[in-house]
Image (cartoon, rainbow, N blue to C red; front, side, top):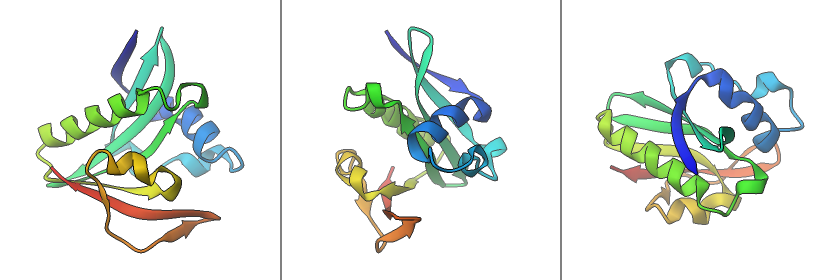
Length: 135
C-alpha cells in the first residue's frame, strides 16, 4: 500500500542524494530555504520511496528535489506524489507552479500540463529547462 505523508526536510536528504546527485557531497542536495518548505514522502510498507519539496511564495509555488528510488520509477509513484503537490499548492493559494526539470524527465512533466518556459540551461553536465503550470 502506498501512502503520502508530510515529512521533514532531513528525511528527504538520503533519497535526494542517492537519486539526484550521488556523485556530490550530501550538502549539495540541501536547499537554503528547506526550513520554509513543505516536504512530502511516498511510503510503501513504511519505506520512504519518493520525496518532493514544495515552496510557496504568495501565488507562486515551486517544487524541488523530486526523487523516486530507482526500484519504484515508472510505477506511478511519482505521478501520485506530483498530483499531491499540485493539490497542496492550490490549497495554499498558489496560482502558478514551476520547477527546474531535467530534460530527460520533460515528457513526464508535460503529462501534467506543464510546459517549458525557458531556454535549456545546465547544472553541471545535466540539461534542464524551467517548466510551469497555471493552477
